Amino acid sequence: MQNLKNIFFVRHAKADSKKINQSDFERTLHTTGLDEAFTLSKRLFEKQFLLDAFISSTAPRALTTCEVFCKQFHYPYSNIIQWEELYLASADKIMEVVLRIDDSKSQVALFAHNPGITECIQSLGLNVRIDQMPTCGILGVRAETQHWKEFSTCKKEFIYFDAPNQPYNTFSK
Image (tube, rainbow, N blue to C red):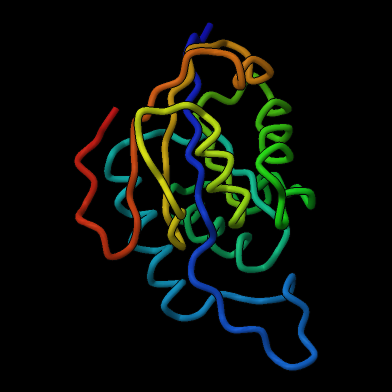
């Protein structure tokens, strides 16, 4: 049985500006955002984390970011777990989603929005400071637990960070 769980919190990539008669929810990725997602997913893949679940907000900008990562990891789009409650979710709501992840999944990527994703990361008590999660930023956390429902209380450690326009991450498994 797996005694460790890894989760990679990913803020959606750069989105287009809101157009007239378009809701915030409907915003799509900017071409820069697509490039960010491709680059960051490739770099995470090269670290050989074997992701076995992808969870995303249903907002197009988050879901498209997730799909780019899925393509890099050869993961079927049809298996993406889409949770509406991740759209503009608070830190507490994001944590509720994490606590509901199926225990059969041990390496998960979760795609969400600011400010909730930054606040969630800040609440984890890690030995790393993230003031503002950048677009397409990735922060990886290793949790010493067999059960996701224990994630908020178990021992956790920072294992990975990468973001566009940042020096390439040197952290690894």
